[in-house]
Image 1 (cartoon, rainbow, N blue to C red):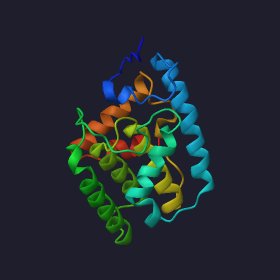
Image 2 (tube, helix red, strand yellow; image 1 turned 90 degrees about the horizontal axis):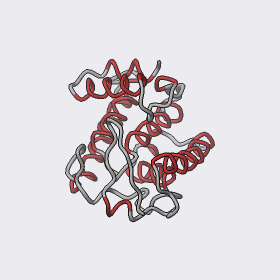
Image 3 (cartoon, rainbow, N blue to C red; image 1 turned 90 degrees about the vertical axis):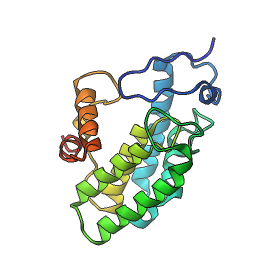
Image 4 (cartoon, helix red, strand yellow; image 1 turned 120 degrees about the vertical axis):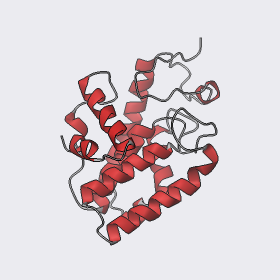
Length: 198
């Protein structure tokens, strides 16, 4: 029996060939997968608290890849590797490096020229990162952690609370988060900014 997953609103399905790169072959349910992924993610959160990179180090393709790899490397073979298929969200797979470079350049410009307040810079970075959707899966969690690292380490402000509840589960908090993302997709970043500090 292979890995059979149910998806909730806003989750990107994992392709069959991506499922083949599951490192822990005994995982067969979404609950088991979530448990192993969360244990892996908690290790990278601990790592992020011990590191003190400048925003110039954070705003590199290598750092973006490193964070994703650390988040999922105990569970998935594709951790830290750009997706090889197009998804229901994100840029064309061939445009990922170019779009990440543009995002990094834009974000550095925003910081150096104080175009936006620090919170807004980090949230705009998070939103564009998830919009690019560089990895096969985990892009939402990855973009939130990258925003937390950028705001706390690079910009020296408090990390975001993200609604103070688990937004990967069904419920009101996730709905509010997704609605804020959809508003940001339309150019209105304010609900996502508010949600991040809720």
